[in-house]
Image (cartoon, rainbow, N blue to C red):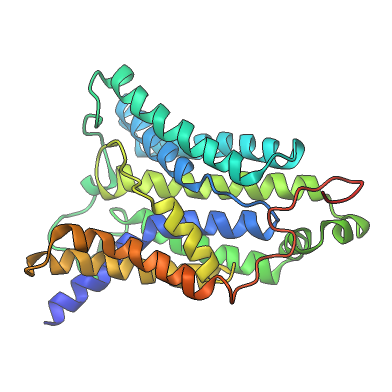
Length: 306
């Protein structure tokens, strides 16, 4: 029984890891006033480009660098559309989702000559030793679970940055009242650009975890709505790093429970629905009680908000 509980906890932590990365990206950009609906597409881009880098160089460092650069590029595009062009942020984010997921499926066939999935590549799963997953294994195999530990560092660092540094105070001021922040001498445009780009990099790292951390390939549709679950976690966690991280762990626990209950006489489709149903329930119960940053999703110009 103790081994089962330990396995469920370990699986929950592992399943929460990609959500942590994406949710921290959402928390960062939304506290600056930019809604990043494109988290799903950025995770897919990070997952695909990490595999691409690993396939051609056989290097995990290069694979992660490819994911980071891809996330930064998509973040820069979103920032340009949402901040400079003041486009509708929801539409811009959804366009990124559609373009990225569809583009990755197309490039799978073009670059690898096979639709559906890439060839197997070097991954973090090849580091350390294998065996059954338990909580202790996360500690004994720090290389194998390096992205898990990096996600924890990202959560702690973002919390300290937002609530213990002047830069974090400025960023939250931009998300609450950009005109007031501008009057105080804060560069609103630069702050929103940086928050969107760095947030997108975090989302791409979450995608890289799925392709070279959890498995060793990219398959079409492997992100499977995790970007939207991460967005729900941001709302559920009241736009705070620790709250969003807790919400991701909540969703990760039910993903682990889904795996643990596979031996039970329950329909597989019902178990697969569990994390997504809980996402809807969480949003229905908490979205009305949560208050987003006042200027979240509101375009800005130096002459005033529109």
